[in-house]
Image 1 (cartoon, rainbow, N blue to C red):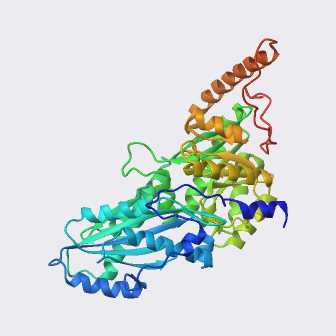
Image 2 (cartoon, rainbow, N blue to C red; image 1 turned 180 degrees about the horizontal axis):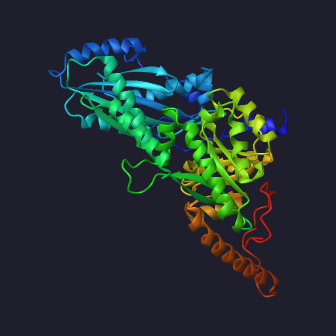
Image 3 (spheres, rainbow, N blue to C red; image 1 turned 60 degrees about the vertical axis):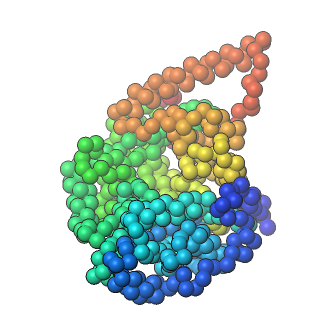
Length: 499
């Protein structure tokens, strides 16, 4: 076994502290979990049949609620392939959910990433909300295995009814739509009632995005990626923004979710490309920004004409491929792993730099990592933001940094908001930082003066540091700076203030 392979198999093997109430143990603990009783965990067809029978008892027996629990699992590939380890995690997930329910409640595993839960005879719709909150909390703590930390992020759609004429299938569709609404609104759960017009809600969302794209009222904001040792702004990430004051208010995640769901992703990607390259040429390049990173969705990775689309946009603005970075999330690679790898290699051959975004949330097995032609790993903010107070998150961040450096990759930590976290990341040898500790995402016009002020302040800091080092009576710094790693960003223009 090579050094890299050995490190890969050992990654995330550390035991992580966890609340005793949420039994989240090593693989041998998960393997010892016994699946809930068969009469309480049904197959989907049996659940719908039982649901139809329970609906006939409404309203005499009280209100009934159906929850569709979507699971964003970090072991998505293993789960989709129904591996033995993923099956053990699935059993543990069902056990945790079952532990939050009443004896009369029942559930079904619909797919590897979706579970249906029925709550009959409720006295109030609010109880369904409480049940959803309890399920989300129960799944909050990661599942720990011998070679993997498996995280599960639930998104829950709730359909409640007191109408005995409703069908189980109809209620299921309502709950599924509510789950989509929870995702697009970036909420842990969303509740729909029997009277809600779900098709009208979908039409309204589609129309809102269509109007926004046609009216050119969307915008981009740019968050700097700062080299941790030199404090130079090497590049920026372009983030989509919904116009303020326009109803309904959509979060960036909502925009992408709607575009993905209703086949508008290519149009949205074209808008982001053109806007980002325009801002790069007219604003960002002049203050030393070497590259603009944009996010590619799972749907776009499956489009054979994606390389042509990117090259056409570059040609319009006269920008080289090295000035455009492409970020893909781990989860976006699982639809067709071989096709994704082929596409990434095609883009790499054309001169694009690529990064895996939200690293640490998309795979339990990292065997594919060495096959991806990437230059950067971005550590998900879910680990970064709590690493000072969570030993498990601290271990995960340290492991990812070591892993990336063993593969010769640059590490970017996202969501850094305070000096304490910054200092620890510096000590760990993290290469680049994104987060409010330096700046929020800014429109291009506002980014220019910020970048100039930041560079000036950085030069003053560097000069003061140099004077202190040269002074014979000045003590040496208390900590040793992290090692400098090579950068792949193109050189800043000579006229830029960072040169």
